[in-house]
Length: 349
Length: 291
Image (tube, rainbow over all chains, first blue to last red):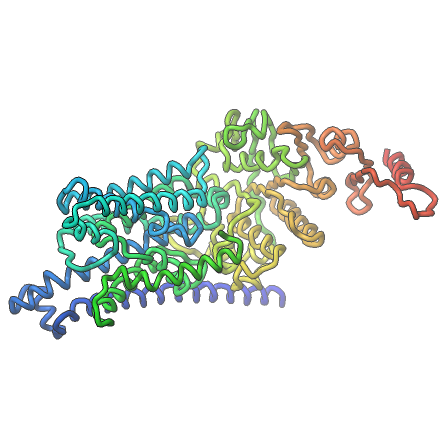
């Protein structure tokens, strides 16, 4: 009898522990959402002139002076939306890749998807002398083609291997970067500035129509990725355990990879590769949301918050203005080194 | 634990050929798991025993032949539905970083959950019960990565139990565990089998443990089934010689009354031993006593 009561008490304890963990996840996710929202507001209010909330709100609805309207609707709103959506897309894509391949190094930045996008755009601009629209299309195509090549190579002999995919990706990235360097050297000098915009992520001068592909991709892909987050969680247990528990592992991986690639490629097309956002978001969001929970939603929200905060810092924190990619690069590089040192210490490399 | 007995299912392989990268490891094996029984698959390294188990658990698609559950090809059954009937303890599952024991065991409920229904009282009860059976309830809120190997293995088995399948396949459930843990885990499993009728099939390295705990043994060699039957029929000096290529003598396990295999090896008897008889002589005596 006493033993049974003790067992009941333990069961109750366990339910409480579980509830606490779920609450922590919900709270962390909500907090990250709120933070991203506040940063969005800051992006709209801050600029060369600091406008009051009412003025900006009216301007967004189309009421106010011409100067305010221009600043709010043409400069700040697209900039804010670009940071929000691209940051979210990078964060979510990175986290999905890292979880699927079970390696924090596996993310669009490091395995060459964003390099593929850059190379595609740069080729279009410098060699084909095509317009912006073609560059976007070519950037998205470049990202997808890179991933496809990587996927085929890592499925060598019909057996998928995550570490092979990472190594192949690093190789492809080096190839893409070499290609970009060659094109920059061979190009006419006056074309180069248009191309460099694709090499380092920046929210400068983003116009609303340039964001439409990213909006469309986000609306379609993000819900699908969230719907598959349950299966993604099961895949974390390893391929065998997931299959045994009734997960269609191959299909799940294909769908989620496709989602992540579309997000990463369209985001790169919109803002250029914003360094390290996809790399940092997953692990940090996971730490915040409670361990053992690599859900893509907090990772996306963290990515958005990181991008927006870095852009604000790049605009206002220093004497000189820096594009967002430079700020995230400064933040991300030490983390990469830290991670490499720790992983090699644990023998995970 | 007055739980109802589970259904018996007929899981069998018919002339199954399977392996990796187009190379057959299991060659034309036909086996049928005795319902409500415990079967053990034994054999030397690389004989295909794990591959056979994985093929039965549909982790590997057979190159030819068929794996059927109650007469239906396992490939034609919906994965989630199949996962409610056949469970597997994989050999090296991955522990997600920092996951709590209770949450890991809870993932065994996946095949019983609907997309938008969320976590139910039944899930709750099943997880609590599974943790109780494997005595890991006290660890529920601890992080799995901080546990010892033996505790971890019990957590994984608890996850497989939370799945509440009628058939449970176990790929070397006792490797890397010290002997006390091995016995404890096999005891718990055989209780589960006796009380609920869960059909168990496990790959075991230790022939004596297989002989003690299994009702039925499949011995494999070079990808083929070399012998099958009750422990007394399979664990014989002749069969062990054929399957493992090793001389041995068979005694009777004084505790379980099952056959006990003693390898002969080259180092027979101790030089400094002034005892009355060599080990060989002693075992021959017992051997004739059994016969």
